[in-house]
Each structure stands twice: as C-alpha cells, then as structure tokens.
Length: 587
Ligand SMILES: [Mn+2]
Image 1 (cartoon, rainbow, N blue to C red):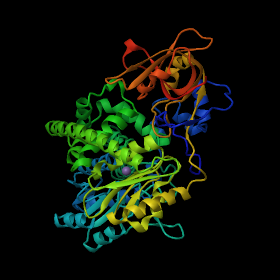
Image 2: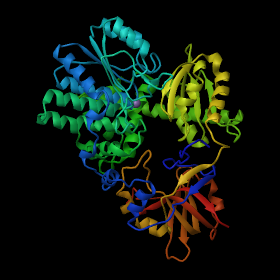
Image 3: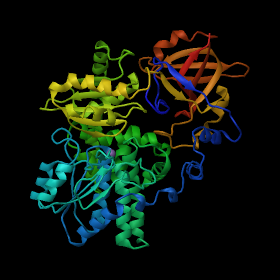
Image 4: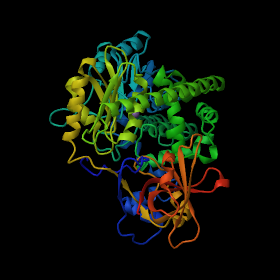
C-alpha cells in the first residue's frame, strides 16, 4: 500500500472481514515483558526509558515551553497588549482542541486582569479558521487585538485584512504550514507566530491546546518572574495542563514523548481539577473517576465537547471549559448530553447510508483506492466522524462532501502512510479551500466539481502508493500462550496510557482450541469463545466484538490462533477476557 512503514493499524480494531497481515515479533531477547514491548517498538533511548518507566512520568519530561518556535514572541506580544490595556479577543475553533486552547488562553488573560472576548466560529455559518467578516465584526465591537488558537497559520488574506483595519494579530496554531516553491515556510502577516513547524522544535506532534499551553507558560514566566507565585503555578497544573490534554487526545495526537506526560498528569488531576464544567460533564456522562484512562478523554469527554459544535454553535462546550459558575455549567452539560445523543443517532444513520452507497458504486472494490462521495443532505458537521468510521471499515482514504450551501463542505480521513493533506493538495485546483493534517483534512468545493475531484483524488492516492492494495498489517508485540497473556495484564497495563501511536500491547496466542462459543449483547452482536491452549490446563475467555454472526464457525475442537490484548474486566464477577483483533483457523 502506501510508502513508508505506515501500514500498521495497531491502534485500531481491524474488522475481521478484512484480511490482516500479522507482523510477528522478532527474536524475543531477554528482559521483562514490558522491556520487550518497548524494545520491539524502538522506544529504547534514555528519554523513552524514562517516559515509559511508569504510567505517571515526571513533569520534568515536558519539553521546555521556550523550545516552541514563536512561543516567546507570542508571550511578549500578549504581555504588551495587557500592559497597554488593549481589548483582546481569543479566536479559536469549534472542535475540542480549539475550544480547549481558547478556554486556556482566555482563562490566563483573565488571571492577569483582562476580560477577553472569545470568538468561536460557527461550523456551518462560518466554517473553520480565520474569517475577514469575523475580524471586522470584532473590530466593530471594539476589539483591538486578536490571538488565534488552533487556526490561522495559512490565513494570509485574513491577516492582511486585520492589518488594514488596525487589528493587532498573534497567531498560534499547529496545522500544516504553507511553503513556497523552495520549501521555505510562508507566514501570514502578524506580530508573532507560535507554531511547532517553524524549525528547531524538539517534538512537533503537538495539538493547538499544547501550543497554547506553551505560550501561556512563557507568559506566566514573563509576568511572574523566574519563580511564578504559587497561584500561577497551581493554575498551570490544575487548569492549563488538563485543558492541554483534553485538546490533544480528541485531536488524535500521538501518545508518545511529552504528549504522554500531559495526558498521564491530566488523568491524575481530572477527578479534582479546577474545571467545574469538566467535573460536571464527567458526572453527567457517568464516568467512573477511579478508572480514568486516555479512552475516557477520546471516547467520552472529547465527543461531548465536539457534539454541540457539530450540529450548531459550540457555545455550550466553550462554557463548560471556560466558566466557573456551577449553575451555568450544569445547564450547559445537560444540553451537551442531549446534543451528543442526537449526534450519535444521526451519525450512525449517515454511516449506514454512505457505506451502502459506496458498495453500490463499487468503491469498496479492491481495484479502487479511495472513497469519495457527496450529498447535499449530508450534515457538514458529521462528515468527519462518518469518514473516520468508514475508514475503519474500508481501510482506504475517505472524503465525504455535504451541506446545501453554495459550496459543498468536505471532510476526509486517511489511514497511516497516506498523506491526505498532500493528496488534497494535488487536487487543490478543484477545491475552494482546504487544510488539515496527514490523517485528517477538510475543505470546500463547488458542487459541479465533485466527479472531477473524485477522479483526481483517486489518481493522487494511487500516485502515492508503491504497489497494489495490501492487507491491513497488525504489528504484534509478544507471542505467548493465552493463559500466560492473561497473567500479564497488570505488567502490561503499567505501560498505559495507551492511544494513538502507542496502543495497548498486541499479543499473538497460538495453539488454541474451541471449547464453546456463544453470542452476547442485546441483539447477539458480539461473540464470546471459551478456548483452551494445547498442552495447558484451563480455558481462556476470548471476546470478539461485532462478530456474533460468525458463531457457527466456532465448532468445539476447532483449532485457531489469535492476536489481541488481554483486558481487565469491568465487572470482577465475570473476570478478565482476551480481546481479539484478528483470528485465523488453522484446520
Ligand atoms: Mn487542532
């Protein structure tokens, strides 16, 4: 498939209807299971050893905030604005990352006595990023200066408008920078730009919220001196750090390097953090505060923060992150919970419709390398989620168009190894606007261009592949009998938090034999298999999510092998199970 190593889908549950290639571990070597996992993943340097030695690596492993290019310049500009009493607006984004970054900067400015205006564009009415109209509106409201978070790095024309109307501008962002023909970075006109890709940043895969955290840290240092007073230090730990983590996980940043430190410490602090809205949101969603992990952020908090901005204005999610008023955040949380239910229902509907259409149009055929579809009735706020879900099922880049405005809105997702941003760039002539990252991107287009775009995008993807479509690869960390894998749960669990680019260890269990199999779940969707390992006593419970319809294949005595991960059961009465990602019968 694509160039590079990126064929690994280790973080994802590979549906078993797509044949997967297993990349088994090489020479086992010595050391503990944990050491073998880390060695197999190439995490062997001194820094990585320290980062992965415990589920709570020390805060000293955060990268120095000043090493973010432009962090000091942005902090200095903000300091100047505060000193001259300028009226400041924080210009963010409607997704979890942009909202967390906006709340972080707004809370910090308030700490320094300012009363910032937070502007979050409306997904449908405005769309992502800086808009000249919004800047003019802010100016008319009496705003003197704007700091962007999670947007603006390619807003050349809008930055010129800001200059023309006398609006001062600082840009902080992490989206792909624009480069000229010689490869040099082009920056919009502004007082300062903080961005990880401007050269010299020791770790570039950071979110908009982490960029904001670093600018905030530098501003605290600038205004607080070498030893910031206790209140600022506590603020950084109890407010800024959780906000940074709540942005980076839903933005699907890799859980390695300093991102691991942010997330681990946020998980430690969330139950008692100084964000009443987040506390209320977790309570309303029924989160068990004793069992917080990165999934709590990616599957529970993140989707709820994103929910309101998908269907309407993101006001409630911003309130949850920004307000300290208990009654206000409670009301906002209740509305968010409703919006999230609605979002879930409509998204599932859209995924079913889109998948059926992709199948009918032959896009799931192995000869096709991409899925591009559009329909004005598809809600623009749900396209990204639906594309992500489809990608999970079809394992090729997916770009969906929707919305009944003059321009169709687009959102796409691509598997590791295919650079979606590059592929869209290759079709830029057909798009009105686009931007994003290697794995996720969005844009807009004239409806009449849809067919031409589908064709151009298919060629762009094909040009970036080094051969025919190959199966999904699952990188296996360890090979051992199932009952031994079950005994290793605690040791392997100590490597958490798990997430993007650092998944839970994947184990290959050979020589299994079916003892019994049964379905479970309201409609028998899921499958549980009791299996014994040849030559060992006792059985291991295997869970196969969404595989209930295959129950008849698991006749007693059939021999098979699996790859997957042992999981601590949520209910101690039922014990632990091995979660199967892929399976092969060997008879
Ligand atoms: Mn972002």
